[in-house]
Image (cartoon, rainbow, N blue to C red; front, side, top):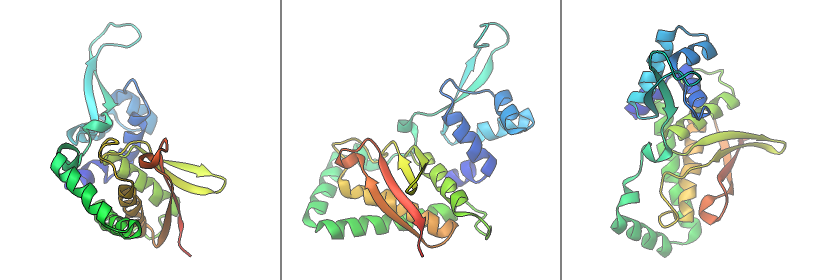
Length: 227
């Protein structure tokens, strides 16, 4: 939690991370400084904080156009596999135990339990981010903060603004591959979204629209304000 807060507790740093994430070839501190109207030393400070947390990788390259000149640091988003992982990915015994335990529960009960666990964790994530006293924060701003935090946890999250409402789409599952993921685990990240939104904004509603565990290309959760 402390590492996440250190890396993403600053709005500018969250924006820089998303900028780096969308630049496949990497960026320099000078490019970040120009993009966000910062002094290059400030931009480098933010990038080094992200690198220290393992969220970006640092490479030394010469000028990409000419191949000449003094080498400079280039910052690239770390691969999803390098982000925080759950030990369950690497422990076959625990995976089998989890799947057997879930199979013994009624699907609705298992999903309710998983969502509750995710919601508690989401609240803890939001509380570790600081600046919770911002009472005028908009729902959309809170949702962007949730997407950033989910991405930091390996979910590669993004906001999809559709005609029928907002939804949060995650393109990577840090729980593991198909041999590990049980469909009910999708309720965990749905709970995380709700727990963070409730803490950062107020009472919210979430509902699953699609899931990679059941064959979808991504996991999508519709989000809204609970009236």
